[in-house]
Picture (spheres, rainbow, N blue to C red):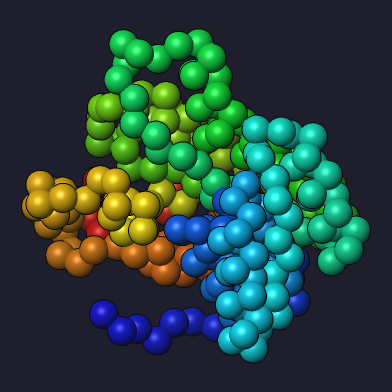
Length: 256
């Protein structure tokens, strides 16, 4: 469905930092903030598609986002990237903790090392990114943190227990950050996507049974795509949501 999307004047010139911005939902978020005139930086561990994305955005006439290659399991590198963005582009006002990996796994085959790696990939960096961005946001007079959850644990889905454990934990993290950061005028919210038709999801998981599942479970009989999620993130980054904090914003076409 073609829509007329909102323009948020408060996002123009605002420094935005996005994790996992090189593909999928993250790439759409990068594109949408750039189209709003934001000063965008993003990290990803896949260099080639990330650089291609930055070039594509510049070719459309928008300011190219700054790409910094980073494996988010390395918290020191993440902290260096956040400090660099604040130093070179001004204080980060919007932090989008998008990066995650919903790798499927059988519970009987999970080892302690694999479990710890899933925590590092899907949960740990969200806290440390917020911790690193906090001083910049405080100095700027406030900011917005958008963490990413999932409907998977809400729907009691199986087949990836380490992932769903992380995504459930994000909700608790968001509410705690909202309380701790609120006195500094920093908001924290969770965006909770449904089953979003990224290239990866279509390639790995979408089959005839999945198609039926979508339309049986969703109230709205349309597939979700990355821009549907990105537009919610824009709202939470903009001043329009200035009194929204400690909340879950579910974008799943009514599945849950």
